[in-house]
Structures are given as structure tokens and as C-alpha cells.
Image (cartoon, rainbow, N blue to C red; front, side):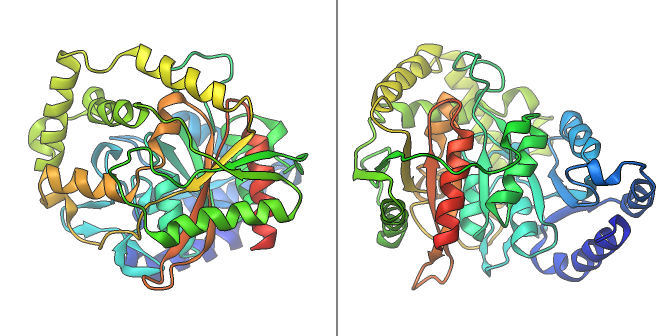
Length: 396
């Protein structure tokens, strides 16, 4: 499809469907002009994302310049910015007067923080959306909305806890192959552009949550087990395991309270839940409860575990998405409890800066919302995760 036609089609769908789900915060008035300019590009066929309408998640006050530059350099047309909770902190996406809803069930949240991005892809408004993943902000909404989402790991030669290790740019798409192509552009890694079939993998299926007091819905447990059974059926070595999480979940929780401190605007511009969250974060920082050795210890333990495994499969979430409501008007404790109960499996991989993905795995028989399995691996395993995800996608 020509760039102008593709963008016209996307903008028409956005105008029709976005009022129902509030996926987009803003639609770019210049998108059609960008498409016309791109159509005259002398080497249009050489651009990997030529004319593809994409959405980007707006960061506080601005869209990420590096993300825009790489997308536009690949020929993509940015049609708008997607909704996110304040400072990207929460596993639900809403703001005063606006709630981002799940296209699979508009009575439920699309997840967060890239909830708008996931909703845009799930509703068919764009085929590719960008999202930053700090504690699961790509995988959580991907699982909630039934799309594929992947976050890359930190660069293999960088240290745990280094800048960029905790929050990295990921993608949400309807297919694994689209995600591989988009991720190759955003990560500037040509080797990821085409999905490669992996060799025989050693896979552990781990269904216990990182914190033992948490409960996991049995159908979300079954989604991970089903993914493992599919992997075994195509020849991979699969066995049940327990991931040695240790105190990694607590370390990730403490870091969550501090992630928005440096980007926060004046307190009067923030809802009460986030003002409280930042106050807790300042206390955590003042008491020096966040330390680099926590990450070092967690990574060392996981590296030992992965001496025997290439990939671990877990549920992506622990329960169906919460109801779509103005969570931003509710108290801090209610928000934290909801986020932790809903999504305990994702943050550990951000803590150590390792790659992880969420792959749709059917539908919850009672909630009628999507189910998903999380695939995680050690540093440098992005291609392996994409290859395994593609194999499982074909079986689904």
C-alpha cells in the first residue's frame, strides 16, 4: 500500500475508534504531509518500514527524539502519541477525564504504562507501536490486550544498573515478525530484522510468582504451561522449574518508587497517588534502600540458573486486567495493591536488564480477556526469544 493510502486508512480508523478506547493522546496533523513527502523518496523500496503508520508513547513533556529519528529514518510515519499514566508509573492507563480502555473488553483497563500503545495495536489502528518498558510497561499491556510485546535487554557490554538498564524501548505488534523488524530499527540491530529458527532450546516453565504471598489465576498459570507444552511438541527440552527470584521482587518494588523522581513536574500537577508514590520514593532514596549490589546479587543468581536453561517461560500476568476506571483519583495503596496483584512477573527482568517478551496464549474462559505467556532470557537472547515466539505463534 502506498504511504499516503496507508496513513489515510490509519487516520480514518483512529478517528472512528479512538473515542471508544482513548488509545491516542494526540494525533499528528502533519502525518499526511509526511506520507506525501515519503512517497517521493527515490529509494522508497529500500526503507524497512516504508509508509508504515506507527504510534509512539509520549514521555513526560516530549516524545523521545532518538526513537522518532530511527523510525522516520526507516520510512515509518508517526501518526500520533499514545496515552500513558503520569510518569509511566502505573499498570493502568488513565488521566483526569480520560480512561484508556481495552479493545478486547472496554470495561477493563488496557494495562500500563504503554496502555495506549497496546490498545492502538489491538484495535487495529496501527500495526506497530513503541513503548518504554521500566517495570513491564510493554509486556503488561501487551498481555492485557492480546498483542505481542517485547523489550530488549540492556547492551551486553553494559553493567547491571547502568543508565538504560532499567527502562528500555520496546515494541507492540500483532505479529512476531513485525516486532522483529520494528525492534531491529529501534535498537539499530540489523540482525534482529528477520526471525531466525532457534536450535533445540533448554526451556524452564516457572509458574510460581516472584513473591510467594501472591496468588496466580489458574488460567494464567495454564497459559504458561501450555506454551511449554507447545515448545516441547516442536522438539525443545522443557521442564518445570522454580526461578531463584530471591529478594529481586522487593528490590524491583523499591526501585519502582524512585523511577519518576528525576522527571517529575511540580507536585501540584500530579494526582494524589503519584505525589504519594514520589514521597515514598524520596524516603527510599534518603534511607539508601536502593543499592547497586541488589542488582548484582540478583543477576549473579539468575546467571547461575541460566547455565542450565536458554529461556524461562512464566505467566505474563497473574490475573485478568482490572476494571477501567479513574485509578488516578484513588489512593496510593489501592493503586499499588492492584498493580502488584495484577502484574508481579515482569519487573524482575527489568531489574537485571534482561530481554523479555509477552506472547498471546488464548482467552480466559470466564473473563473473556486475553491470556499470555512471558518468555525471558539472559543478556543477548533477543533473537532466541523472537525465534521461539514465532514458533509458538504458528502453533497458536
